[in-house]
Image (cartoon, rainbow, N blue to C red; front, side):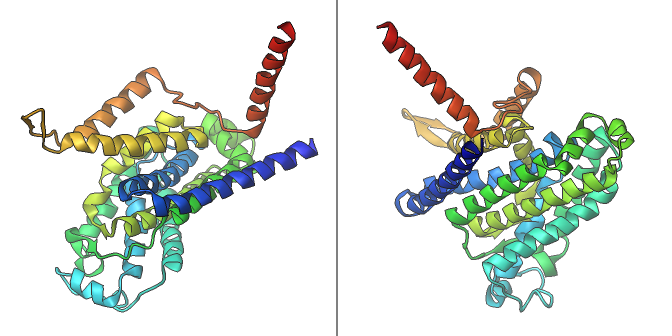
Length: 356
């Protein structure tokens, strides 16, 4: 048993090293479009994993992801922009002090973006998580929209609706996927701990969980703050990938996209979230070409703006109606399942050889 446990750990380490080596290779040898897809895949993995913790494992349906992502994105953008770039970007009003003079390196900015988003997550979660069901959904959606509208109405801090441009593109595949792996690992460790068992109790029956001594308020807020930290990290990575952010980037569509990926993969499966994030990232870019006007076989095709949103809305509806478990349900990838399948495969091959 101990040997198998050590083997699983060794294989996991090898797999992580393999992923990181692939990111380095991809950055150097793949074209810009493919690299962009892999970037977005990794950022979506962070967002979906954080949503699965709140909804899949704690049972609290939240629509705050778009607003929380905006907090992380704007924090990192404002900290990494040089004072000279801020003077050029801020057209509606001059940047206020200390924003006008501060400039931090990428890593501390990303960390502070995650921490600040966690603080905002606590401010949102403390009152919002007192309600349940549809009321929680409406409350978190309202908070998310309040954040977006605040960004539009503080021109001295966020440059209003014009957003920020010229953000240094410090993000690379190693950073994105390294942080995605850390997010999955940290979430998995939390879910498998005693706190995770308490979160599952809350998901199944809050009254029964409280009866056996689970502090509902503490565990709900802890999960929300933990999730918010990684949402802020994803927002910071997104800002440094795009090089520009605006309040329009963080409309409710972003929250709906995260929900679609979570349902597609399985809300109780981190592995399913990884797979679904890749499917969404690739499909979204493929559908972008359909939205643009082009000429097909000599016929002018006007394009269909909004087709991606419509397609994923229909997909989400079909999943909810006919395939609620998603691709993975509550199943996670494990080396034990790989071992058992290999043993069965070799067992069949051996028995076939003996019959021959």
